[in-house]
Length: 70
Image (cartoon, rainbow, N blue to C red; front, side):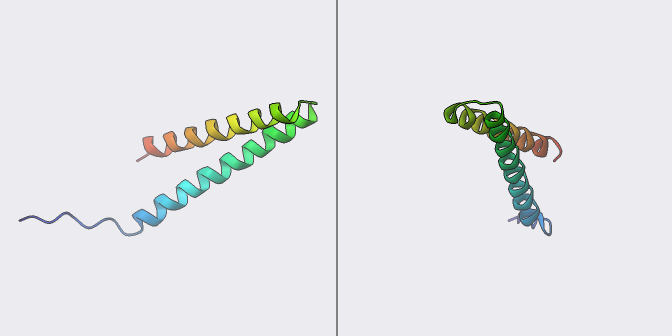
C-alpha cells in the first residue's frame, strides 16, 4: 500500500496567510469605496452597495490570482 506524500512544510500556514491578506485588502478597498461614496454625497444604502460590491470583487480577484499562481 502506498502512502500519500507529506504536505510541504508551511503549506497550510502560507495558504491561510494569503487568504487573510486577500480578505484584509478586500476590506480596505471596500472601506475606501464606502468613504468615497459618502464624499460624493451618496446615500448610506448606496455607499453600502459600493463598499460591498468592491469588497466582493477585489477579494474574488485576489483569490483567482492566488489560484492561478499555484
